[in-house]
Image (cartoon, rainbow, N blue to C red; front, side, top):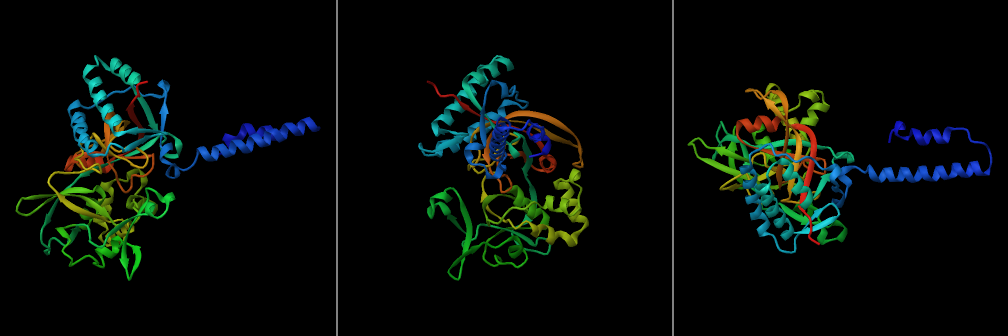
Length: 423
């Protein structure tokens, strides 16, 4: 906490007060109040990644609600909700969702979506829509990073990458399916305090050890020769960013296409190579983007392994008929699906975002920023999307969405909506 913030208290202690028992009693009272206040501040300013799920969302009154406005056509939102219903319909009836300090059932989530759609269809105008939402829904806001209610929005997309079913001189870099020796251990099975936490590991000489990191897999070849290769790519940077996006389309020499989607990860910590390059002074912070990373590695090929291996996290894939598939098990929808931390926010919940997205030229350079406000559905998760202050927006498939996703890095607000319970 800054000295400036404490000045009112600091000045009280610094002022000269006439000597005497009453004066010192007054000072003692101030000291107790000051210590108590600091203790409260320490609790309030707890780092976002240490917050329990119940503190990720805060219910707000009418004074804190946004003036809801949807800047996209409704068809895409209805499509996202329809896909999301398939996820909700698969859940057991006793599944609960956390909204701040409140718990809601699966049926209440379903009813919220049904009522929301009804309001969309019945509302005469924006004012009427906002009135109905305020009347019928509880609104929760993310506490954001450092309890500022600000959320950092980034983007992801589904890349289309040329590849081959066989390893050739032109295609040297494999993408793997989930290895048989990768195991997931639920720590809550061993101790109640670890409920909801897990580790990814393998068994070596009878002991549980961490799974192979990126360097061990790609450089040392620990997984080669096991028949795990789904396809081979021509560029290690393409393979790396496919891991980051979590899904993609592999276009084969004969014109056929294979949809691949996230299947598992090696459990190693995700480390941003963008921040790594900024820290080393390789790319200025204000110019950082996926495009900037690619350009740096293209002009410094000798750095590729060192930079890529900095991120030890590694993703394994599966072939799917249709993609990309979110963590809810249903396809995500361009600009209507977000990836968020399911520990903090309700998976499959109705959300509303306010932020800015990049405006880019044909080369992918950012020429400006456009304000957006829209309803979305929390249908995905991500290795780097942790805590109440991070959200990833899915922008779509191919080249144009890649420009937006690669440059997206903007603060904004995140809200979740849930229908009020009838008394």
